Image (spheres, rainbow, N blue to C red):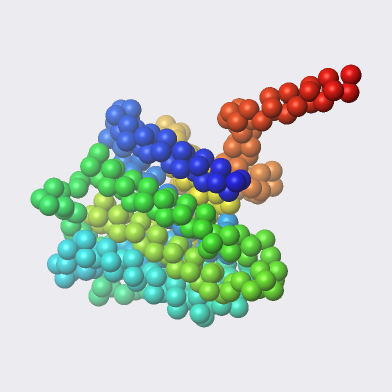
Length: 345
């Protein structure tokens, strides 16, 4: 019954969040704010996938930006160089990170915790070097230009409200898929692995298979985000997919709360808002640069790990839970106590 209640709250939250996403462009005053909200949707897709990997499978990845980059460069090469439709390249942008994750998953099957984090960090560095040095395909450090726009039955998605809705349609789909995963038998198995992998194995849970599955899913989500980013920007460069990007995604998940899908969404939105605020402040104060932004993220990450290890979203939800409890259980409990008191009297 408790699990059913959690599911109901998740779907109610999804409905309310969807309404907010639909009306948000009409509340934003500038095209820059709509662009930032669009980037928030792209970051949400990556963060939700990483949240599944960290919060439910208990695996730390510092290579998520590499999967993000593989998805972006896959569609850039296929569409700009070979003239393939962006919708067909979407399949490759999803399949290529999934295949790499499958190979890495078998290679790193025995790694756990920080050892896995270091291995994925090395993978991210390798991908970044390939994007810079493989100039025949990626155009090198100067960047890849001429990525075509996405069209759908004659309608062209350009930067602005139309692309905002496209990105958030994919983001909402990712959230729905993730909610279904965590409320399924797979989700229960992942939570047991996160609590104790040894105990899960002793109970007959195939821990390796489940960790592999969620690792591949997180890579696929990153590939979708990369596809959206490439066709929104029309040009990409390796700098967007380096270690800084992986740390940014990690900060989103840790800040929002890795044990909740909504925590990852909340973290992505909050980090995007903080980034926009810092950039606006940097235009007025000279010493506030991108390096200051990295320092701020590091400080936020450190404070959250020390004081709110579960993340901001679970802490806020716990504070608001008494206010949102309309079940009447307290009243019922009080009436029962009163009846017992009358009986004793």
